[in-house]
Length: 526
Image 1 (cartoon, rainbow, N blue to C red):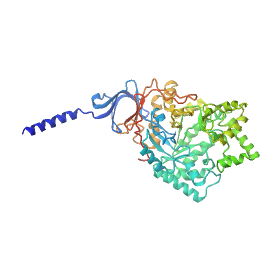
Image 2 (cartoon, one colour):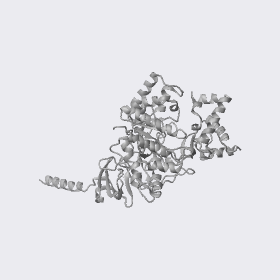
Image 3 (cartoon, one colour):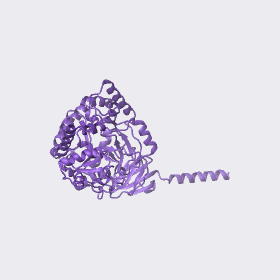
């Protein structure tokens, strides 16, 4: 009897103690919630349990109900940010993805501009086993597929080659790609006709994918490039994203009025077209973009052989001069900045004009063209082109169909000089454009980088702060949030991003990066 009584007492005591155990892992108290729907902010406490948002309460949640309590007084509590255009190629070497996490990014879409891992499935499996700092998903890249099947040649594909490319797109979609990306300004995509892209995009559309397009031209051929993308979307019956939308080169400044009007007109006609944009007045891509694409027909060795022919070399040089004057060069080689070149690292951060002066040359387009040829022969490199107009950037940012994509490459402090978008895109939208310039409300800014993007990707349980959704959450100070990275000193993390939870785990904890690596591979429809 004594043993029975002791057991009953112990059971009652255990029940009482159990009742006092916290029911939530984290309680975020006292903050203003901006939930990602575009609706007005409201004061609420947010509770996380496991990898989900367990409760959002407009009344206070008792601190005792959480294992941990975060004081968010004076802070904004928002869904984790979604990067619609991210260069995740360094992810195997930089699995922590710190440059993204510190911006508040909890999901990034990779495989843009026509380039992606192929086959996609095994690559994603390897990243999942590696453990990664953010959630990532991928598009299947048209350029990668085309090069695998055809190489770098300027000709129409045969029926067999089209069939093989279709099969690779279908394989990528089956393995979880969110859609197909093209880089029609780059090779070998630039050699493709519109009909080829439509045929491959139809395959992605059949699986519910989207079409993202680095346009064939973003400078003098911008209007035609937008028209082509809209045609592809209409004919393939696939939702479109005009990715990193811009009006490039001084002669095209202001043309975003026309391109955005084209988007509006297409949408009124029932064509599902959207866009993404980054908040900077400079682009970044390879040195080879200044060289006419025909010079590479057959690959890099063909480029070298053509240079040996004086007539062809002169044509190549004249093409480069044209691009410097009218397109990516912005009319001045001082606008062309080295970002990452291995063959002369001391150039990183300097301009093509600086290099000319090092050589004792006048910084003219003609001398710049000679240096471009030399640099490409040495292996090329990554460049920054200061060729966008702030008025266009703001106009595109304000468009109701514009989402946010960094176009940034995962980075860490080092010897290269990356575009500052790699470190500062999302805080820059929040700080400079929403708070300081009042281009739009903070609610609209967050919608553009969360709920709107999630809807485009059919991420039904992310992008909106809602009970039951995954616990991708950002807590930031609306007064201090700002990008710090600059073109002169790019390796600087932003300020004001105080907490970042990825699937319920703190990746940034009171401003400190934890390297928690709680990210996951996300697949379309899963």
